Length: 289
Ligand SMILES: [Zn+2]
Image 1: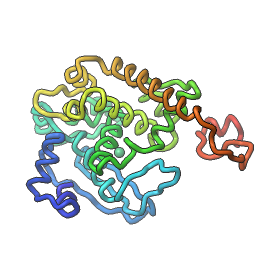
Image 2: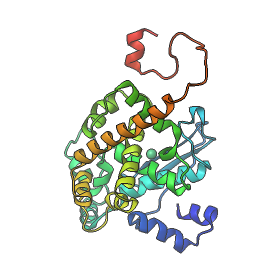
Image 3: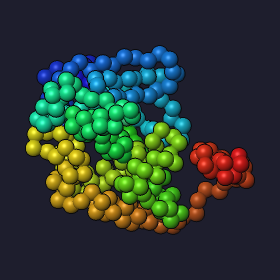
């Protein structure tokens, strides 16, 4: 990200490092590998921080179908997004560094040795946070580091929740989202992005962007567990704030729906009597598509 900020944004290396450091207390402890994949003709990115920090970037153009992902320039979007993942998951407080020394590095959890989950948590506690926390923060950052262009302000995510309010659909709570919400999700954790970025945006709007960043950063004096740190920073439980966001989202979307209903919609003709588009596996089996 530092190289990217230098070459693309004209910042000096010192300024770029300061920007990253101020945001989430980035202290580079190792070289971040960023190999380019040439095996897939799609834009994508992925990060892992255990046992080493690796950013994978696939540089083909991004699909703008349905405007589900509306970034500006794709390399800027991908590097911002993926390096935020690297920072939120890899940033370490004193205790984490101690365990990294003790265990000779960051510990990868393996199924055959369940106790490795504990060692994983002790060396990288924020990498163990749920997907909505990781994707919500990355999406929030990549939107605002690109000047407000991204999913946090995109039409698609807002439309999803407007549709849910219109249909009276159930909103997952954090636990339900991490369990059932992830299980039925067949599109690469889409629910994690949707819920995560709406909740993070609400937090920034209701409290402040600074408080949001404080919660996400793993600095000295912070709590390792993301929900405990939430309580410390916001003075309320994560579940209570989540319920506050859901109530606010419903009020906001009811007003949007009322504004839409105030005027007739553009006439249209159905191309098919059946809804097409994305369907989940269970839905597909149920309707025998
Ligand atoms: Zn991501």
